[in-house]
Amino acid sequence: MCSSRTCCCASARRRKKQEKRRTIMHIGLIGLGRMGNNMRARLEKNGIDVTGYDTNPEVSDVATMADLVAALPAPRTVWVMVPAGQITDSVIRELEPLLEKGDLVIDGGNSKFTEDFAHAELLAPRGVDFMDVGVSGGIWGLENGYGLMVGGSADQVQRVMPVFDALRPEGPRDEGFVHVGEVGAGHYAKMVHNGIEYALMQAYAEGYELLDTRKDIIKDVTGTFKAWQRGTVVRSWLLDLLVRALEQDPEFEHIEGYVQDSGEGRWTVEEALNNAVPVPTISASIFARFVSRQEDSPAMKAVAALRNQFGGHAVKAVD
Image 1 (tube, rainbow, N blue to C red):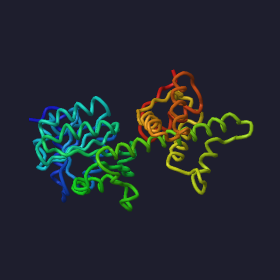
Image 2: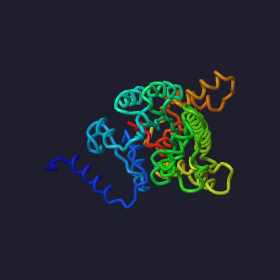
Image 3: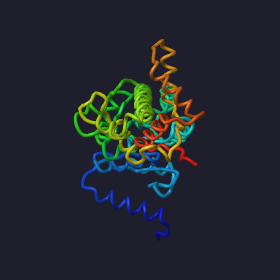
Image 4: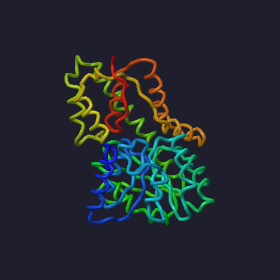
């Protein structure tokens, strides 16, 4: 008998899946947090059957990782969508003995590209393939689709193309998906993408602070940014999100100018140093984030607000 909310939720999801008219393929998804849960919804909406596992039983379809593997048809495809670093590594190590020759593991988190080499090597003796996918889209991906940067073999990319097509934005495939190269290439591309993102946010933020400082001249800061949304060379989705944040809190009175960095920006600078490539704008944006942890500033409030808008990243509220 179903006596818990967890069981009822899982049963409802199973019934919904059984009611589907068409299923293109069936994959496993580990990690049903902010992005993972939205990805599951988008995949299912587009004909991909998903069995999800999460340590939170209220959102998980199965009780254990072994149950997840058992629920999937061979050859299995398991997409890992958990925080980068030790957690991703532990998940892949737990998966490894459960999988068989011909299965595929996809790391869609923000892992460092060098970790991809180690995970591919770990799985290879069992005949299990590995693929890394840089995913961009944040909390808006369910509605808008996700930008995908893929590293892996051409054969495996083709095998799971229905999954990529379900996740990417509508429109031409090459405007939302790229097979960058072999293992590691997807996360490398995402690393550079995020380094550029750091610099773009910093530029908007510094412009905000300068406008906000001269209120004797600029009477409508929010309106100024809003007027840039169409027809100007600085229009972008980040600008749209900045306008959204300003409309919600015009003076950023409810947010501290404290900004975390999730690693990719640092790795971008490290790679630039290793390859003697000058990246002064990206590196300056990283150092600006470090400054934000020492003192409050209007510019860093804008960066914190932008990260919250596109990725749902936590902000420090003003005491």
